[in-house]
Image (cartoon, rainbow, N blue to C red; front, side):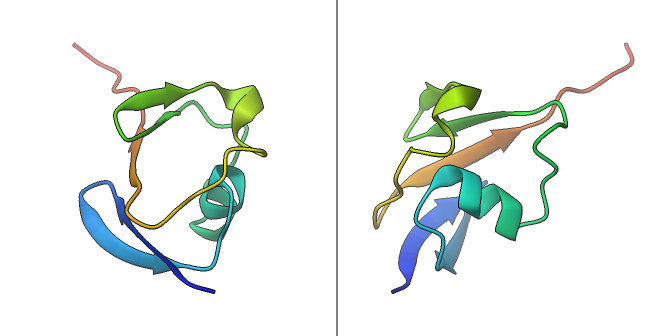
Length: 68
């Protein structure tokens, strides 16, 4: 079953049912430094495996920027 959502501002149809499954399917290394929000709400890393995705979710993945 495909889920329609927004991923970093772009529409996507995915088979992943959890945030962690989505991240892995998109090639993110879970040990890397980044944060996730769903519908403008921060999702703590321990909740990634159990946070279910639903049609219309807006997922934002934010990575730190170094330099200054």
